[in-house]
Image 1 (cartoon, rainbow, N blue to C red):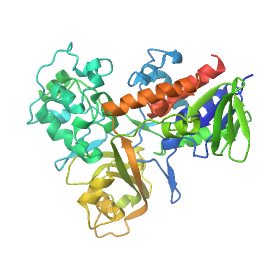
Image 2: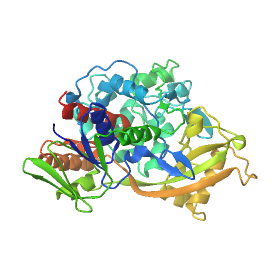
Image 3: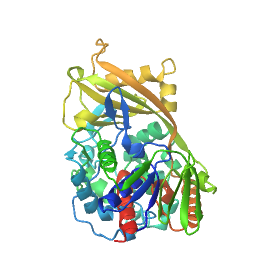
Image 4: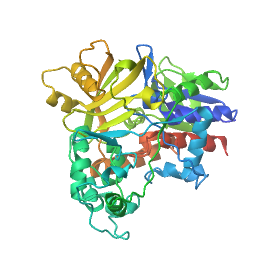
Length: 460
């Protein structure tokens, strides 16, 4: 029996290893000396588990339109949705999930149901902004063609929004959020990858109906775990792997990776060699290219992010938010997440994460350090009594340079080219996450990629 070799730490290789082990297949998993689960593992601070910013789960409850994982294609935007039923059933097997309360947006001093990611278009009913001009469904710029039309290969979000949303609605409700979170205008990134900026691309007739008081979209639901920590899913999988006798976890840095003698040979720090005929990679593109000596893609536009991790005393919270998208430019922060409110639980202290673009924070609060500035905004957004100095305890403030890469034409093209050449070098290895292209590192994309690894490596 072949022993698959899985290298990396992202969620996809973790799922792949877990599923292979469940089928009785022996697996060697080399983490490259990084925590398994990647971004979705979260962070443990002050005895509490935090997700890194807003992390909510998507479950498409309908049956999958496809069950053949071999047909999953990373080049097709959001192709995981074809396997949505499969992903939903897997999630339900792992955790007792809870639907989160409707996220909200703060716009011009008003808190309204979220229209950026949750489809709450009733916010626009009776609004005093004009909608989009009529646009034929056959027009290549219509939002229904965003994943397939060649026009969207180079169409900016600004151009797509003008045609599908109308300039007035875009300028009031969406563009301010883009400026705050990314530090650029919507001319700067591709419309096809609009979710990279957490902004929508609605059909023009859908918005016109909403403005006329006839919303046609149901609210898009999000979910979390029983304890409000999505990283719990990673914890569960790690616990299972540690109890599996057919899984070998190697928590050491990989020094070299080569194809020799009809198999992959990986040397790790300390001198050990691990081999396998089947290989799956769950590394970042930069790390994978460095390991194999290939040319990595060039970095393009990106935004740096600062995150504040804090606990807030429950009885001091004057305004509770599960997830608040801060569109209002009076604030530097673009998002606040209360994990406990998301899960519908009310412990003595709530776990709260505030996210802000690093440059925006420095510009708006030149006299304050990041921790003090974000604590100030947290108190305002949650209506915490300013006189109660003990109601908020800041546990950690982290700056992450170049955290959000923007999907420009050059970046997407360069990444596609680099990954194509990398694919040739890796001789049919199962690639995951950013190694497959731009925009396929979401939780559900990686879940499907992990399930696909298990299917292919087990011969099913």
